[in-house]
Length: 393
Image (cartoon, rainbow, N blue to C red; front, side):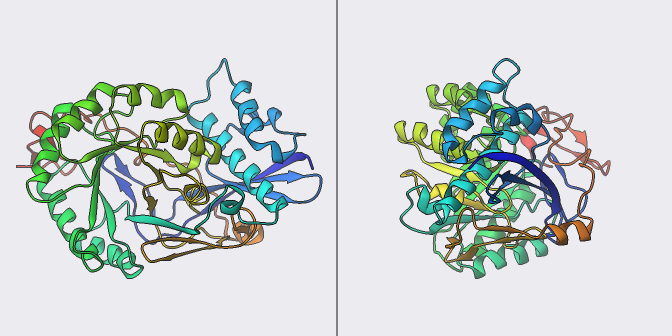
C-alpha cells in the first residue's frame, strides 16, 4: 500500500456557546475544524484532524510511502523542513498527517488504534474544560452540570484578569463537581497572561480559598526560569506544554524542573505524544493531553504508563464527523471501530457550507497588555480596573 494523495475539508463544531480564554473569545459559537483525508492506492483512507495549511511543505516526504512506516515517515517530514523549521503551522500539518498514517496503520490491522498502540483498557480518565470565559455564571454552572451528569470529578476554569470573578467561578464549578466527589480536582488556566510576580500573587490568593490541582501556563511557554519560580511560590502543580512543538522545546523546562504536569497538544499528532510521554516518564512526570475535536490522543493515552488525565472540551462532535467514543464515568470510553474510529460524511459537510475564513481575533491573538497589568487601566468597557496582579478593585 502506498500514499497517493490527500483531500482537505473544513467543517464546524456547533457547540452552541462562545468559547475562549483570557486572551480573547472566538467570534461565533461554531469554531472551524480541519479534516485531512490521506488517499492510498488500495482505496483505504486515513483521517487526521487539525489545521494543516502548510501540508505541501512536508507532503513530499509522505507520497509514495507505505503508511505502516509511520514513525519513520514522521522523521522524514521533520527532516524535510530541517533548515526552515518545524514549528507552528508546519508542525500542525505534520501532526495531521501523522494521525492519518496511524489511522491507516490500525485500519490495515483491522483493529482500533488504541489496540495497535498496545493499550489494554479502553477507558481514558478525563476532566471537564468548557473554555467558558465568555459565559455568564448561570451558563457556566449549566455547562459543567452536563459534565457532572457523565460522572466527571475534575474540571478546569479559564481566567486571569479579575480575581474575585475567577474565585466565584472556581467555587461554583467545584460545587458542581462535588456531586461526584468530596474532593473534586480543580485546575485553573491563565493561558500565558501573567508575568512571574503576577502569577504567584494571583495563585496564592486563590489558594487561600480553595485547593488547585494545577495552574496551567501561568507565564510564557518558553520561560523555564519563570515557570520554576512560580512552582516554588505556590502549592499547585505547574502544567504547561500544549503549545510546544517538538521535543527540543521541552528540554529547557525539564532541565530547570519547571514543569510538574507535562502537557501535549492533540493537534501535534500521535508520534509526538508518544515521544514526549517517554521523555516525561524518564523524569517521573505525568502527561496530560490538551484536547482537540475527536480526541485523537485518547488512543495513545491508554498506551503510555504515565498518562494522568485527558482534557474534554465538549460532549459532542463536529458536523459530519461520527466518532466511535462515549463519555461516561468521568472520561472517554473508546470504541472498537478500526483506526481512530472516525467516519467523515463529506457530502453533509459540503452541503452545510461549513467552510469559513479564519478568525482575525480571539484567543489566538495575544492582548497588548498581557503580562503588564501592574497599574490601574481601563477595561474594554472603560470602567477602571485595578490591574496589579490581575485582580480588580
